[in-house]
Length: 241
Image 1 (cartoon, rainbow, N blue to C red):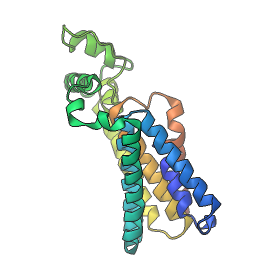
Image 2: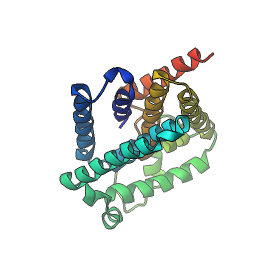
Image 3: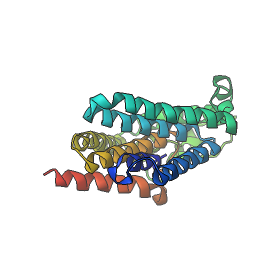
């Protein structure tokens, strides 16, 4: 999901030239990524990718309002491709409301998140300590008739708030908002820097949304692509000085 916006950036950059082998390769590569994403059957990943597409389109539209037809075409083609892949891979059954209501991945998350909110309320400033969120939930807040094991809150934001306190979470949310606003600000410029800002903003949004559905931030390998996006935004902002 965090890689997809960079395909859209390459498509927009002028050095690719007219439709040809390069753009055909990009289309195949992007379709392969969408297919891989659908094969994970990750609803959170799908939401993250669609959020990235929304931010990319929003930045471009804010900069070039008259390009709305091209942007709608671009977004519509991606949505259509995803719809076909959802049906072809069988992923569509997992997004059906009747399935989600009985899916353990959904039901267990809701129970866990409710307990996490109670834990956050019990220690809003200091938190429960690093590595204690899952254990604290199982020991004190999990129903006695449930035996699922948890290491985290399966939500990066709730995980941080429970273990490290609300002040830390607020700082992280402010940083995320700053990065997204920065991508819009840089996107007002012309040329390649605006395209890069769209890609970086989309990548950051995909990362931010994906962390809602699982605890991604504790794995350093998953920071590579969004980390590059953040550094790029900072470098582009320095050029604006």
